[in-house]
Image 1 (cartoon, each protein chain N blue to C red):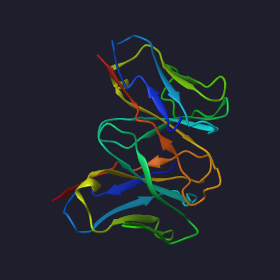
Image 2: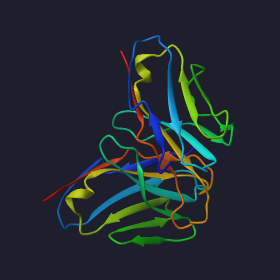
Image 3: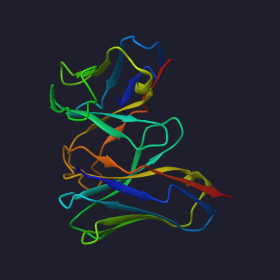
Image 4: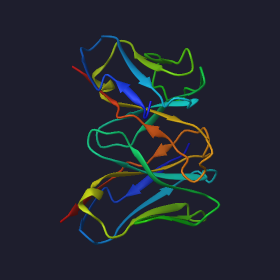
Length: 113
Length: 117
């Protein structure tokens, strides 16, 4: 089955800095890679996703890159703000349709004012 | 409703007891998923429903766990003879392909925190 590794487990940055979280996956058939933000006491919230037919996707201050050859993908957050502080999870699945997700273990991002 | 609703938000039960966790998906979403999240871990898949049927229950850890979705909307996760190791946050999510292919994905509920004492 799929195995998703995520690094780092914790990341502390100053407000305004950039943050990068990296994930690797093992199943070459995976073709859908979402990122979730989870705040304390809440469920994960989808913030951006990418499919295997593109290498990069941006949405305002966040971007995701995908390298299918190396089987890794990354989340980039620019101009970080204190409200970006949360746990971020990467995930992978074989289909962007009805399919189960395999999650990484999460990265706790702390943005200090 | 506007989002995925899970009840109760917290449940404390004694070892050996039976519990039921409820999930109300987004109206019209045909796919419903249950995940379990242990402290400091990512969500782990339990079971997936397409309509009323369980399309994939390969994540259920053992036969003490069972889930139903009799009318294709609300789902109930049932755990028999609870053990302390069952303590976790149980997350429900629903999804639909819809027409917004740029933002497809699950919508998770806030979860039920189950504590077995």
